[in-house]
Image (cartoon, rainbow, N blue to C red; front, side, top):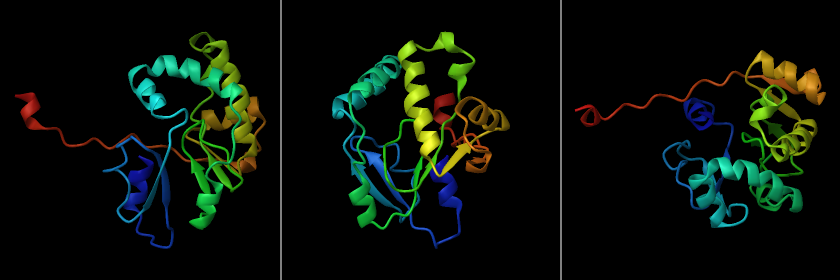
Length: 181
């Protein structure tokens, strides 16, 4: 949806550079024509992509545990600075660590309301890694007034740093009529 929104922009004064994981293809028909793409190695190598695709629930439990023992480094800063990137937008909660200005996008804090649906490692990961990313970001995006309220209440994010930008649902693609026959 983010890429689709950028594709609709008529403003040519903004150059965009996308970091995508090697071995993924979702972006090939989604990113705006003319945008630069940098393919980076997935965390923990190709095995992490295979595991994430085949066992997403298991990965959502294991990733916080493994992340606790790995030190996050600003891995891409040199490349981003070479590309003259001014701002990094992290549309995914885990994102990556950078010294550049950041727009961070925690989708929700549902673990605060539905703790039984999360392992203790998942909750700890959200309350440490995600919270730290939100507190360090220059701008924190929220999709609804409820998320705005939660960010202020639970993570003490300044109201000045939070910008509510509703996320539209993904565009529905034309269906193949042959599937219906």
